Amino acid sequence: MHAIVCLKQVPDSSEMRINPKTGTLVRQGVTSIINPYDVHALEAALQVKDQFGGEVTVVSMGPPFFEQSLKEAVSVGADRTVLVSDRAMAGADTFATSRVLAEAIRKIERDFGPADLIFCGRQTIDGDTGQVGPGIAARLDIPVLTYVIRIREIDPEKRHIVVERKIEGGRQVVRAKLPALLTVEKELNELRYASLPGMLRAAKHKPIVWNRETLGLERNEVGLLGSPTIVARSFTPPEKKRETVLIDGSDPQKAARELADRLLAHPAFRKAVLERRRAVTG
Image (cartoon, rainbow, N blue to C red; front, side):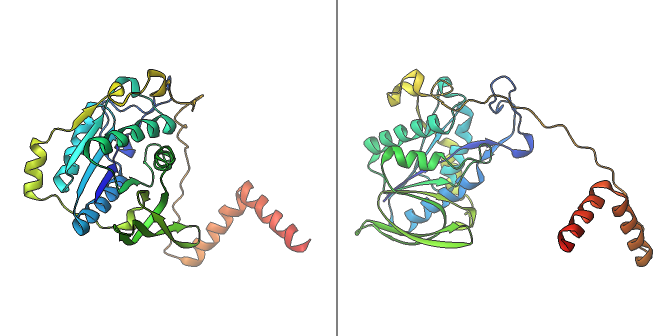
């Protein structure tokens, strides 16, 4: 079986910054990590390879320094990696990103064989939209199974997959035909560690690099020009200053009275109490 994994390198959430002019994330000079959901997508693909044989191809869209994340994918068992890198693709929204990745997947299938399964993380921690995976599936015209938390069955001969997916208030069991695209949750699996042979292989690994022209895409189909989403304004909210009072708890009754007095003295709390009384008494 051939599994393709879409992997993204994202800024560490503790260091995220936004360019106030473009409304896009600042990536240069910011510590980057593999998107936490995507590593579970990679693990799912590797488990399929362990069970059925075949190959795992990892594809990523981004600047050249994304190569480090692709090396990490090789260290745990990926067979090949593809980096789609082009300055023209900078600032892409989910619409443009899904277009580029779908075209990259089509070329991977032409060059290395058709995909049976495509794995994506549920969402990325920088965008938080959860739109790219379904967008890729729509462009490839294949079934999409989102929020997957368990793979129950894969039948390569009958060409179907059965999964459990997270829904509000419970779980849903879904069957789909192959090929299919899955967006996965973190609880789907436990991550493996890189092996020494894998790390040695990764140290020598160079990804296949494609650009816009390689995929046959026009300049106005990628990056900011190919993104219908417009960020009108972006800003960092001002830090809120809060007053903190520490109440001595050595005497519980005294502490309780002091807490009650402070709450009743607060206008918002007093207003809420009065509104509650009116609601109860009618």
